[in-house]
Each structure stands twice: as structure tokens, then as C-alpha cells.
Amino acid sequence: MTKLRTFVLRAFALSLLVSPLLALAGEEGAAMESAQIDLTDKASLQRGAELYMNYCSGCHSLSYQRYSRMGEDLGLTEEEVKQNLMLSPEAKIGETMNTGMDPAKATLWLGKAPPDLSVEARTKEEGADWIYNYLKSFYVDEARPLGWNNTVFPGASMPHVLWEMQGVQHAVTEPRHGDEPCAKGEFQSQCIVGFQIPESQKGTLDAEQYDRVARDLSAFLAYTGEPSATHRESIGVWVVLFLAFFTLLAYLLKAEYWRDVH
Ligand code: HEC
Image 1 (spheres, rainbow, N blue to C red):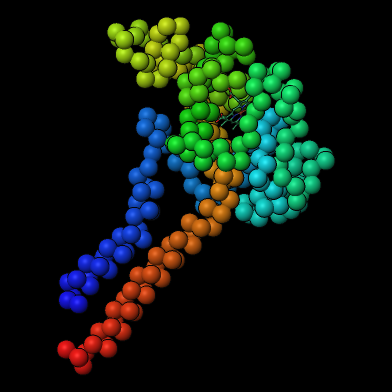
Image 2 (cartoon, rainbow, N blue to C red):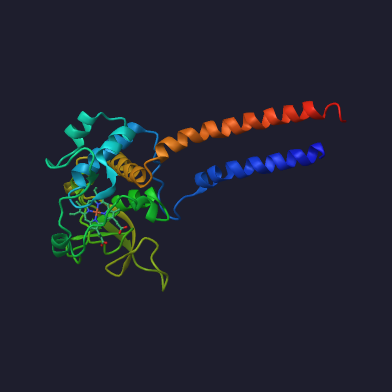
């Protein structure tokens, strides 16, 4: 084999190995804001877990996630998990994270049973970015049964459970141009172009702090969708380094073997 051909083959093999990483980096929801989650940021995942338990677990279950595994992955001791994250007195450390909400009652109250969120980030094309944008897109709509609507999930039966932190968003609209569909959704026959929070309805957090809340929650749900991702990504770097080193070694060995032949 000529040197050039060997080189081309090697480069091709290496690109096959690296390309999934590049594809991952380039993937992003169409018109969605990136959540910029970092699954190696344990502090963010811990904050996300706490927010989840306090604001979401009352309605949603995480039936593939055990408290004990979450503790290990997030770098928390069993005691810390028990103290801060297990809100139900009946919950056991080895159990999955169920909700106390009865699905029949939930349907009666909310019109729909809250779905399990274990793999929510994976069911959406935009992944965790979808959840991030969803949590930032609730606005007042008196025409809805609970008074809330959402541009990312129009007609959602979920109320805005984080409104005290974010404040109360109102849709800012503009008349529609001809027959064109509205990019961000529709409100009272006009197109939504943004949101605005009146001074008297400001939340306890500013926009940047609320973004962090939405980011931590979406990071936590990305983690529950793939609990091994936190480990796998850190192993990946070593795998690629090893392969590069091994390629070099194989090349040197080959050069040594063929030296006398040429
Ligand atoms: C009061 C009960 C309630 C609480 C609390 C609640 N949700 Fe929901 N959630 C619902 C319901 C009901 C739906 C189903 C909406 C629908 O399909 O119309 C839903 C849907 C969702 C969905 C979309 C699921 C899908 O269909 O793909 C996500 C994501 C979600 N919730 C995240 C959260 C997060 C994160 C929190 C905590 C900050 C939370 N929810 C708190 C009731 C709740």
C-alpha cells in the first residue's frame, strides 16, 4: 500500500470516529434558543434536581430514575438525597421517583394527566432545548381553562408553575401579514412577537436568574433521560486520545516491519 493511500484510509477511519461528536455539536433546534446545558456541571444538575422535586414532582413522575442512582450520579450522599430531595415521607432511597398525583384526579383537575418525564428530553427533536424554551414561554391567556397558554406547546394543560419566579408574562402581538402563519404562534387573531412582564407582576427573579432556573431544570431532565451520559462523555475524550495514540503506535510498528522489505 502506498503511503498516501494508508494516510487517506487512516484519516477516513478517524473522521468516522469523530464525526458523531461534530454532528452533536452542530445540532440545534430550529428557532429555539439553546439551553446551553452542561451535563458535567454537577452543581447545575443538583440545583435542577432540587427545583424538580419542589416544583414538578407533585404532578410528574420519573419512573426510570431511582433516588439512589441520582445521588451517585450527582455527587450527593445518601443523607443529602434523603434530606433535600426526598419530599415524600414514604419514599425509599432505592425506589423510583414516583409522584403522589393520582392520574384520574389529575385528568379531572387539569384536563390531562401529567406525563412521566424520565425520557422527555429524548422524545423531543430539540432535546433539552425544548424544555428550556417551554419553561420560558408561558403567557396569560384567559381563554384557557387555567389562564395560561404556551407558545412552544400551544394549548398545553399545564399551568405555569414557576410564575412566582419568572413573573407574569403577557403576549406582545402584531397584526398578521396576509395569510402567512405566525412564527411564534397566535393570540387573539394576531401574531405573537414576544413577551412582556408588567412592572406590577414582576417575579422574584430577574431574566438572567430565571434563565438559569430553566437551564438547570432542562439539564436535570436531560440527565434523567440518559443517566450514563455524564460518565460517557468524560470517557469519550480518553477513547479518542487512546485511538490516536494507538494509530501512531500501529504506524510505527508497520514502518519497522516493512523497513527491510522496501
Ligand atoms: C399542576 C401539575 C403540574 C406541575 C406542578 C408541573 N406540570 Fe408539567 N405538565 C402537566 C400537565 C397536565 C401536562 C400535560 C400537558 C398537555 O399535554 O396538554 C404537562 C406537560 C409537561 C411537559 C410536556 C410533556 C409533553 O407532552 O411532551 C413538560 C416538559 C413538563 N410538563 C415539564 C414540567 C416541569 C419541568 C415542571 C416543574 C417546573 C412541571 N412540568 C410541573 C402538569 C404539571
